[in-house]
Image 1 (cartoon, helix red, strand yellow):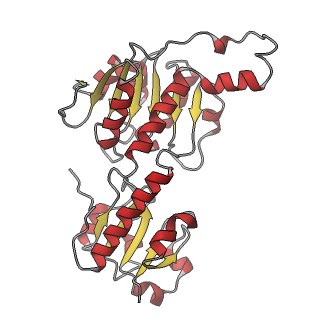
Image 2: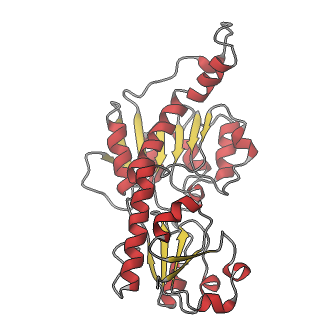
Image 3: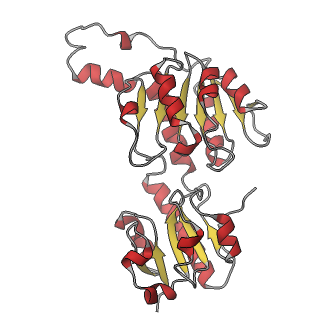
Length: 317
């Protein structure tokens, strides 16, 4: 008889098909488990699947007294109260690096779309303004990538892949992270120094208390009027109100965003800026990434139910 696994976050059913072939899935559909299942149904639940950004406090864990494994679908785990899980003896796993290539690709896409104003150009063609030779100040020539200084905030697997891709555009690449790495890029001693040095700041750092609103008004000021910010990490890393204020005051030139403070509800103020490119948190949303993430989820669950350590356990530095 297959082991029971609770699906805590809201996932498209197609993403759970492979996992459902191996385990008996109890889908809470993004609701509190007690709203969907009776207490006796939850008693035997030993493992659950969640999206890393979904808040999962200790009180929620207590609803499943036998819970001993939380498996995050994806690389993130910022929504899980790790201290509460440790206190309760609950192992936490994730899918490290499974979507790194896809996220790096969308970072570069957003960077190019923002700096070359591709969405503005698209509208210029579709609206008929190009055919009518209607002048547009937004269509003035923009600086290209050759010789640009691109700063990567965070040098984990995603940050490294972003840096490698960006370097191929004949740019200078610099980075800041908690520690210096053996990589062929210029290391800056602080986020402030990185923002002051670069004209494109790409955020690829893991979300957490130490990175919450790390990119604030002061950092955006240092980025400057010709600078762009690209965020493919978590919306919490940018002070979104400060970003809106910086865009309104033309403190920076533009932005490319795949993540937001509250999802799926980016503020209307952001959607009004023609120099901001927005995507709906699709960085890791490719067929290859989902297969890799599902492989990690299945491996973690199979190891847990076999009484073994999780092969992709969360290891906080």
